[in-house]
Image: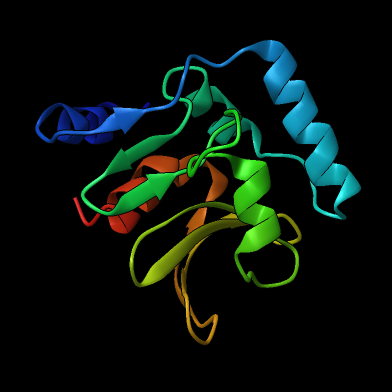
Length: 134
């Protein structure tokens, strides 16, 4: 599913969040929903089961972690984001989000929210490669 991206990760130095606990995922889903957002997309949840947040080369993928820079709840509360979008990650210039109305992953310019790239839900690996510029 994500072989190319995982191969890229093996070639760089990265930090990872703690292993995903089902309780943490449930809490994150509920809190995001209570914030007026939708649930984390299933393809990204599957990714979190293997890599619950990643930081590498100035890029971040958020996870169901405990109060750190990789925490999906904190980042969705703190970072400006387009409507109908859950933020899943970022780099210095762009946001990585999931538009739950259109059911697509998006690379979004941080300044003006211009959609730079869009990916179908089953194209998570391509979206990850784009945000990491892998």
